Length: 232
View 1: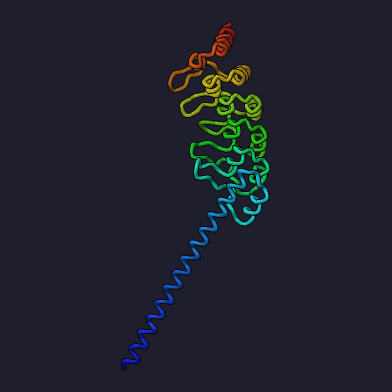
View 2: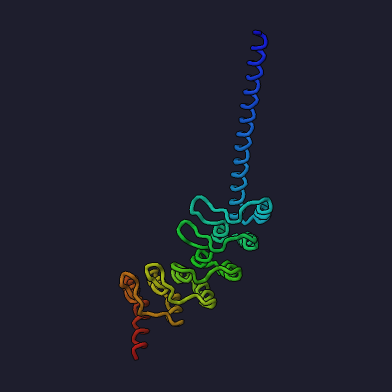
């Protein structure tokens, strides 16, 4: 009787050990899978930054999400490629069927907004051709182009029907942004293209107020001359 009892106990013990070992193997497999995924993600972001299009393509073919984001700014891979001028990678990401052109970074930027601010004309052209939204509500690419002072980028956006008096959430216009940052060339371009110099933002500031704030006599003269011409 005792031997039967010992046999049953031993069998139960072996079963428990086997179950525990299976659990450990399963847990180890999960950890290994997570480590592999993390490694692939790190390789992907690194390849995006350094325009390593071969590695990017390889990882995409293995299932890497083309819309993966970095942990620092929450920027998508496409935004990272634009920031780093990894244009071969930009082309590859734009060709991905599930790429999200309107994906927002943590600060609300889109790829087109970032490209416009950085003056990356090539990226702006590619994004517009791919269908990126030029006139998104709120802060838009045209605000960023005006603020950065890049005439070529601003001109390109206006050619593609960017709303010249686009209002930010606080009703700041692209012209106000150009004046605020002391960007004479983009301010003049907007005025010449018909930007409304009489609009006010939520703080009640006009374009002239922004020009005065910048303490730039050339900008102040630009606004006053245009105002006097409009009154004739």
